[in-house]
Length: 456
Ligand SMILES: Cc1ncc(COP(=O)(O)O)c(C=O)c1O
Image (cartoon, rainbow, N blue to C red; front, side, top):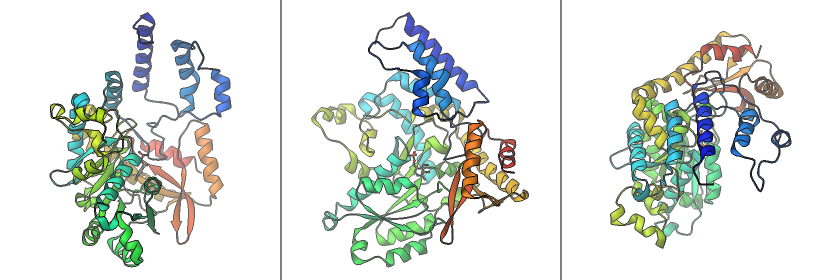
């Protein structure tokens, strides 16, 4: 299995050819899922005693399995938070895999971790956090949020008064589902401010003032969002940070999606206050054009993260020894063994420079504005709210929820587009509407027009 022979050389050529084809394709197809039974019928048994052979397995991949996936960088994939990794970053993802680097400790991964840290310095500089702030790359926004929340909770519990208390955090219903999910993981309660619109400082203060004595004792953190996933709304970070300071609460900003927009001069002012956060989540695999998976968690005081996360074990001592001097990413987030997942971002940043990143992010924001204007100018659709960052919520006049569902499936079935419905709260009801989220700078105005026309 580990020997080098002619079969391996041929396989390497095949895989490289596939990668070259995939990287140079300009019109990739939107694949569609098949049932597991159907996929099994197509490919048959693949895991057997003797193996089916690399060539055969790879052909199955090319012929059937890859066609049951949606390329996230398709220009008409505007669902979810899509992604659009640069070709340079994808290439270096291959290099990262080929290099087999353990990214937990400097002693093993110094060269790779050095590169990650160079990229991280740029990200930290975008936040405006003070000297000493730093971060690490994680598997994504969920892991970054979890790492930050654990740090916040552990820091809070350093005070004996709270040692045995179950924690409480406040966020809004606009916050990403991972906040609630990760609160479950660390067994803390979440109090949701019932507004999906911008969370303001006054509203937060009002919520805190309304807490019971027990709740106030248990409250240790507020999570604001720097670009809600559903609508691209940035909370009133300045107002919220002032209250967190006054009330001695940990201020976490989840900018997993919106964080890339810190690079965009046109909207940077909307993030005022982020520079006072205790921790921030930013996902390079969203709006910083990295391949999956690459998130980041940044701390104003990384030492607190180290106290919360550094793992102890006799076999690990040597890695922390003087001789291994350096930065150990494992100490600042939940994972021990880790891929140097920031390496593709580093290579892409080094290749293209940060100006092009700014430009590509600005294009996403511009596309949202263009889509907003097209929607306003059309008679069959209307904006639900003004575009925010790169998100656009709009309704097809007269459509019921099932019409949006059928339209999505039909577009997907045809391999034309993946644009999915969402819900927006108006008064006390949630209305089903359509949503664009632009990331890929190669999405064109024609793509947007074609999608809107398909709703006529
Ligand atoms: C604001 C926000 N936070 C967290 C996440 C979760 O990130 P991930 O899917 O990388 O775990 C997302 C994902 O869309 C997000 O938009």
